[in-house]
Amino acid sequence: MQQESNLRYTQYHLTHPIPDENHIENVFESFITEYKQFRMNVPIGCITDKCSKKQKEKIDLSLFCGAGGYLYLYLRIYEFVKGLSSEMQQKCTKGLSDQELSEFYNPETFLQLALRQYQALQIEIKKDSNISFFMSSSTIYLLGTDLFYYMKDKENFKKCTMEVLSSFSEIVAQPEKYEQELLYGIPGYLYNLLRLHKKYSNEQDPYQLDLSSHVHTLCQIICKFVGKDVMKCDFHNRQYFGAVHGILGVIQMLLLSYETCKEYFHLKNEQGLLEMLDSIQKTLDQLIKLYYQNGNIPSSIQNLNNLKLYQFCHGISGAIAPLLKAYQIFNKQDYLDAAIHMSENLYKFGMIKKGFGLCHGIPGNSYGFMQLYRLMGNEKQRQYAYQFLQYKKNVYVYNEIKNFPFNDRYLIEVSDQPFSLMIGSVGDMCAMMDFIDYKGMPGFEI
Ligand SMILES: [Zn+2]
Image 1 (cartoon, protein in one colour):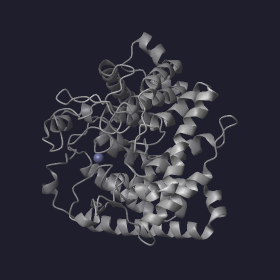
Image 2 (image 1 turned 90 degrees about the horizontal axis):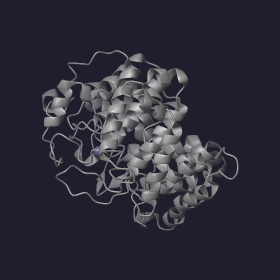
Image 3 (image 1 turned 30 degrees about the vertical axis):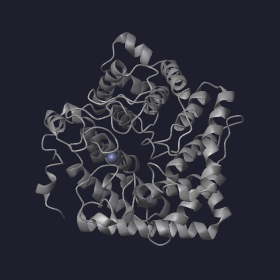
């Protein structure tokens, strides 16, 4: 286990937790604070990455750090408002005036915002070389399918699904052209198809969409590249372990694929399936071993001593979801035990001074606790998530974050893309909504 003193520079140990009360009410209030900030700063139809003032803004439609995240937010709030029970709505009122309340709990408000945001983005879409959920501008079409499904606009729904599927044949024709990690690669495109399949495979015509065969084909391609036995994920000449560039992200997509299209997988290639499931287990077993030896999962095989990253993109924070999925599929207690053990370490070291966002921020780490809570119903995990989601209300934590001279940061005190999905407040808001009514981590769960 690495010396804790080395970690103190990048980690904040939570010695002053905030009062542990009124979870839902307080998280909702934080959400509304963020949402009002967002609306004050990001005009509807904005197509730039809305950077810090010291940077030049540029057109960026990606969900990772660009304007795609704004559309994601409006749709996510629409789903949140539409799905919230009246009992929960009574609890979730803090921060809104009476007039704001009636507007907020009218789902149509957010559908219209989403439509206007979509229209502004859609005319800017150009064919790009990116294919993944997080990076490709064609993800706007993926979100368009949801938008037009909610609006019962079957023409545009069809058009959007065709656009999403149009990359499939190019990928199958030349898979070696693409990476095999989540942020840029084929697993990141597979996520789009899994989302569509999960949502629309049981729908009625004209909204019905069965993508089992597409999903299966992509899994076969991915398995060919990551290899048998212990899987390896090469990205820029490194074999990363984490969720964003590494094998944990790949495993999460393979497990989601198997779970979502189980019958088809068994029917199509039983031998290949057994090999895939076997490799997944061997890889997870090896990662768990590394974890127990070190107290974290290193960033890559080339950098086994780099154990200081406790964030979704590198380290144990991105390991909890795949381990829990593997536990459910293989019924292997080791996976659950490891996930629980990791959550304690994540609580200890995961209050990172980088602070903002999902990719390498505190709200991203809160998902590990929420995922465990969903499965186990353990109140402690919920309290952990609560503490992490209230990081801006904790003066001790927030001061550390605001003053942390993070090398990659353009401007101390705020996030680089302050209103983005993965680096900024849109991600924070998603985590807060998930705390109240869980739907899944963006780009990682379906
Ligand atoms: Zn990151």
